[in-house]
Image (tube, rainbow over the protein chains, first blue to last red):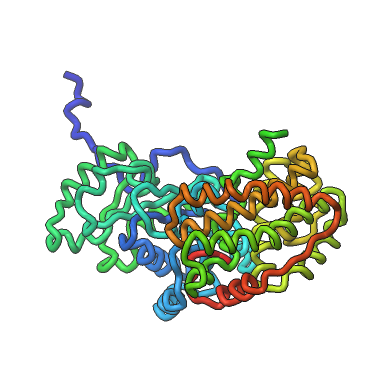
Length: 227
Length: 208
């Protein structure tokens, strides 16, 4: 029997390993889409990434979520992001359309940020919260992160949908709640692997990890390669 | 050219229209527009003002002076919020049209042009006649308003489509009016006021 068959098979890709060919060098900011169901932690992830990259990357944020002045105040008070670096896009009750079928308002928002703030390294585009079928157009973002959460039920990865199956990074948030809601992280891990093949998945508790370290490491790796 | 007309007029043409209600979101919130009958009145009002104007200016832009036409449109749009909405939609349409027809004379357009001016240029690039340019314009105003109403009020989509089909002769008549060469004018003060009120809201679902 050949020796290599006896080697343990490593089936869980490391989050910083990317099965896709490297992105071409960009002469603009890397654009990262962040999608996922309502309440899964998209805005919390944006805040954590802003915290992680403060003083390191020139950052802009476009949000398609319903955005109040309290949201801007929250980010400013937390010392996370200057409000001038955030643009809100109204989607006319069509959150999917604005990030997939008709991306013009989002592209305009990205252009406006770069025009007013100068060269940026990273633009995060947060989708409006909806369901498992949302996906970003490649005309809008270079890579996309899909955020689901443990409290939404451990069957979510099995349900699939383009976000779960094809996002460049799947984030399973609120792992701290698993014992409280009777969710099995093992089931979610197994189903995510089955759905996603070689694409990476990270488990996270944004309540505990205020800098979303594994996601920030993944994004940093891409930013370094794109510039 | 019939297929080109259908494609340019299609509501799925990616030019940012889905995010605009042109004051309808505020009319619904105020309770003035609650049902299909009210939507029909809003639709007729918008067609006879904004619809006719959009069509007349799109036709004129095909061989007119785009800077002058842009200024004329500003003068005819009392609400600053609706002027902004028109320029934002012009920008979105221009973004799409530049990709689709890269060789058209986009450099002749003013900075941040109004949507009807860009529409005229796009229609010319698509090889549409004046008649069909006007038809695409009134069709766009009708379907954008109806689609926003459908989403804001949760109306029966079959009833909304039946209303649009019933208004088809009106659309034809307005398009025929728009090609006569007169730069149309027409104001809808409640629409202007609603759009201005809407612009002051903290949380909006629609961009206008």
